[in-house]
Length: 376
Image (cartoon, rainbow, N blue to C red; front, side, top):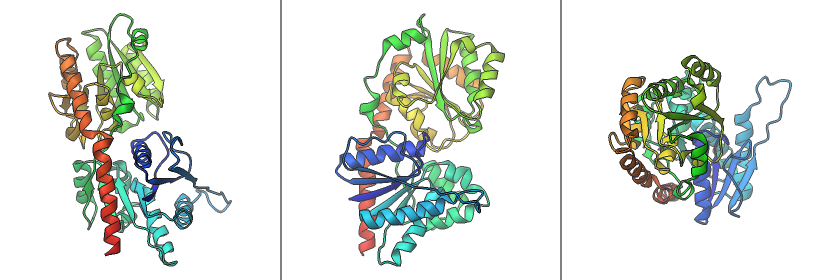
């Protein structure tokens, strides 16, 4: 199969999932063409079945904002025609679904029909897509997709609740490459961070308000008042300065390290004891899944798709958004020496349910369904 993947090339969940999916498809023998404005973060070219096509955006004095959607549509048309793609898979509805629709309409005038699948990842529905200026286009382009998938049952339901969607939405969850995240233990790194055998807590995110990183610091402070712990904060974003000031006010900075954006997050997760994700919204919780794949139990909010991933009392605990006292109590329970090994083992076992080996065939079968439907 000759597949085009349209995604954002950034560290965000949708870009990571799209890139890892493309790499897995290439390993299975499919030809995979990435179409975006820069090379995706996790994309490498060790597989000859992987291709990258850059969307060039020219600037003109007439435009305050270069029309990326038009440039993307034009590039899709070019790649479909000259690479003879069988199918397009666009990740994140805005603006990829509408660009794919436009490209499909243009190609039809030349006797070419290119079906496209739209995968909904979260904020394209729960946040940006609800903006009145985008909602009509989002609804239209999703309904014009030949196939639609969502990364969780929660996101599927929210899409139907807030948009007039007239087609089936198939739930195909996010996934993990267990081979990347297993056997990464680096005890010398843990010893450098926790020289006195402190427990190590970690949080990764893009430091936006919706991630509620302040709650991470509050939970950490509460735990630190009772037992020796250290905290690693991985990522960056608009809330970072607020978080830095907060740790100074709490007097916890000596036990917190800001690591910024890391490509090899597994090296940090593999030496951690607990992952904290108190998000206000989370369509799936890919960062939590990555932690679980490294045998790290999870303290999370019970919002969105997190209850579909984090099993309460087994792989970690779920609390109401903002309930830092409950999160603290649950974290202290997990971190007890007699409890931690059981939670670690369960976290890895749960992560195995989302192995790429189990999820990839779901996408391949869906691709086949869509292609067969076009031939009927």
